[in-house]
Length: 153
Image (cartoon, rainbow, N blue to C red; front, side, top):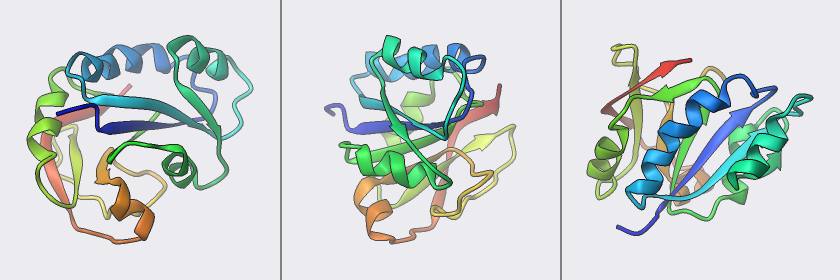
């Protein structure tokens, strides 16, 4: 499958957290899964913008609705939303690849708790994978759980 996923990371003063996250995201580059990386930034005053520039990521200024700002800039067919302190476990791309032919949205397990997320719920949200067209249209498919894990940094 060609690079289909736009990864959107919501950030605010994330310079300490991003170095741990970036190597896990590059796993998707090796799988030809990552179309683009977008930092939806809520006004960082640290080196977050410089990290984005150094990695080739796009930096989008975002207000309270950082996910929507990142989605508006995204070009991928699927959107993977992460917060700056989410860390997908090694091998997470296999679960994503298995899900892509399916419909709807999916959430990642975090800390072994099967916690389902309503896809358009914001604030304290779990990592979410959703079709771009569903997110943009406001459709709210029930999220399915991905067996890949994601933990907090």
